[in-house]
Image 1 (tube, rainbow, N blue to C red):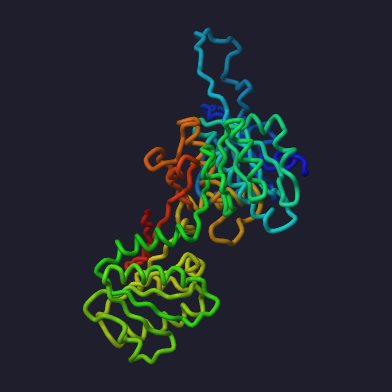
Image 2: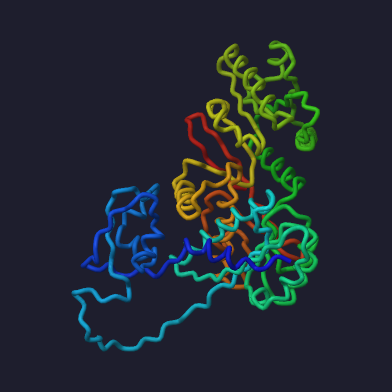
Length: 452
């Protein structure tokens, strides 16, 4: 078994050391000229300050996108414990007021936190997002003690569960592997701990264990929910299915299910093929009703051909209304297909939305770069932002409701950066996430998200 990541925690958490905001002093200790490669953390440590004290003395550091630049000047305040020249040495006689001290939430993280393979590297980034959330929550008055264990695929989790710190957790995030679920499920039941399973593993224990939250949704559940919303959203449209001749595609499960539901409702639809002639292709579309187009693949090459044929069709038939209904993978093609997404009013069903232009996304990416000296992995969704959203949701929920937090709609008003959450109880067991959304690219060149 890997040891608890004490060194790892010390290195990573150093970037998040903050103190309660205090009134700025009127007299500065000195002004510091920034040298090459200096960091905010290094300067704060040099002068015996916390990062929070240094930032409060230099409010521009809170500006999104702020970077410390060589030869710039920053104010160095007196440390909170220092005496400024304007302070007297006579203590004030203040009445003693008893303050309620809220107990820190004990958060455990049991994931493969290593640099050996992709699982470990992805989970390290996810874990860093959790730490960023804890830093943000501290500024909101929510105190969290984080305990992290490296729980790789090839090691038994039992020794971890025997540790005192594990038994004292309020929440545990993990595991990544199904083989660890039996022991962990029994452990959280025995110790009355809430368990959050963040990713796609087989966890039948969810059906009987009320302490478990599972964020992953099965493809079957997603297909059923998306088909139901499709029928509501596109009532009055003429559906057109395009066969893309992709023998590797798994999208037939969705298109077959959707066609079956259309037929049961007596809704007519068209079928065509990417290899069809222009005339035969056009015959599948309605000239009077708005059309909604569904491909039977999520691959980029076939999408390119489909857009080319649709552009030709709209040029030959001015006024024809066409909306495209896509797949989650299409969000990876946004940088290449954005104009077509806008033009064809594209709807993409997904369980997340990474918006690189949103101010909250930009702030998190900048904070990640600042604290870890590298960018997030170029993946969708971003693992660090996923970790941030998960931790913000559950830690705020636990702070507000304690062990009665269920994550059901309306219980918490957290607005996610990337990953919305909405839980429903599974029989007499735990809670599964049911939040999905449509990412909608509007012709007026803006993007909206529609939750369902």
